[in-house]
Image (cartoon, rainbow, N blue to C red; front, side, top):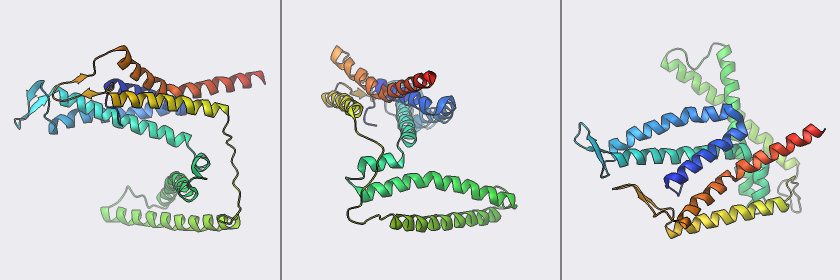
Length: 272
């Protein structure tokens, strides 16, 4: 989000897609490209209609405003940045489960971490329950996609009411379960299956080192890139070249770790 350098955008988007493919397979990768390409094309078309900055004029619009190469390229870059953020957050939702979130922040911010973990877990459950309720209504002849506008609105309100009732009942059951398990009592202990071992320390040191080096390069201007009025970046030197390489190493870290664990798991399974 903070680096609009085109090389960094390509690295971030490519690494995010590679990691998404590792987590969900070719199907998840194909679905990601399915919505990503139209977004890139739309940004390339919409941005020049409102942004007329740039020195390279390609043509003039019917309104008299210039169509510049810089505005088109900047639109593609902005869309690439947005796609990269969405891809990485989709990977985050698959990796970071509620128990991992509670393990990381449970002792620092116990109440907030519990609320956030419950909220993150509630969203997919709410979506799944919506599909169940909608299918049940469709089976009794109350499909929200058929009939007049008033009928569809009435059916949609009915489905929403059912979902709200289900959510409230689920909240009461969760509160009763937490109370019966002793939540909030003094001296209550917490159980976790995630130990902080040497591998975690080495990974944290590696990520922190790469992040610190990239931050230093960003503050020193090694990752600066100008889009208007002309496209221009920092002078290419060995030091400047090292910053994108460090960024590549940082973005590929989860991909390398995931593939390494897969090979290790397959090797253990082949020996059994």
